[in-house]
Length: 421
Ligand code: BGC
Image (cartoon, rainbow, N blue to C red; front, top):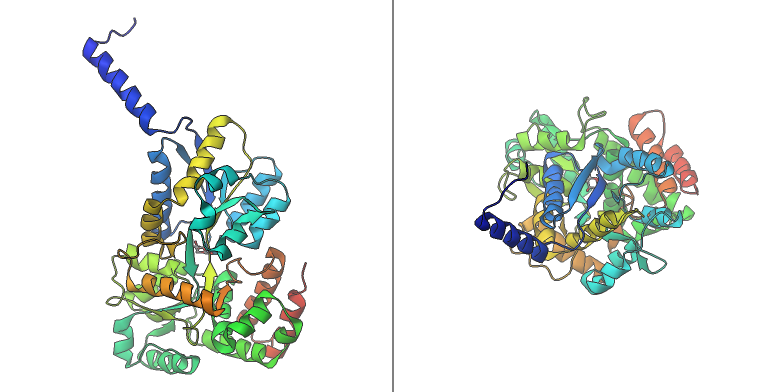
């Protein structure tokens, strides 16, 4: 039987259709999004992106692959693309965007980018990475700073230690925490976390010029020089302040140790702040943030971005464009970055809702960019090819994990790994 609608119901239905037509984009569709945001703070951030997309009438198909730093996600992505079944959007960063674009599998976002003036909304240092042969193929979400030190103020107080600003002070504080029965450094023994610690030590020990020559330009003379050896020795000394359960531990569980006061400090990018905040902790009161020792005047940047793959079907193509433009909207930039621990990538955003850690990050991003000490994070895929990154990371982790390799041997092996093409 045909349903019979009253005149009132009919006019309500007509009104609803008109409203929908007025507020939703002409074509709505589904976007499959590959990401690795599965921890507490990360999941809240991913949910904000999903909500933003659904507000426009599109459907979010979640393709989350757990694993900090995204290594597992990248492996899964490769097999999907190779089998001709790429997701519409994938969380890919830095030089890898170019690597995928060279394969001819990314789509051109210039229509949206031109209409929305992305060139004026983004810092050139970021926009350049999103383009392949001058055309946008990816859209950035945020700016993470990697060279951070997180600390539990209660734990420091109990140990009579102060928040360190140099590596010497760091080891003094670590000794005091140890003496007070607190694990000095919360670490997760996974390759990417070892490498994250390593790059902060390199920046603190050698400074931004050394970092650029060694870990961005992969200059052989710098890689085999005395500063590299000192970096490795300092790095290995940090390990002596980690606990025996560190191997394999996820980064967010390491952050949880600082939250609970089981550990005093953690060296980690500011996605760790997302965990503190998701646990209801207040910066400056329940936890402290400071630049990693010796790195206050530099900034290792890590820009999360979504590369867009070529997809078929009008709805899917439209929804992909909606996602791209939603990401750079001021509204989304604010809510996402408040949860993620990062700062907005869109220029000219108001920072009044952000905490002091984010305000410091934002001010330092601008000043280090001017001063030439803004450097790409090698551990987070911003500095070198994925092949060289992986090879260097493997040696760094081997050195961290075995007591058989000397710093001199590690120097030689890292220099060889840096030649990986
Ligand atoms: C990503 C962050 C992520 C972190 C831990 C980093 O490489 O840029 O977005 O939260 O890894 O998974």
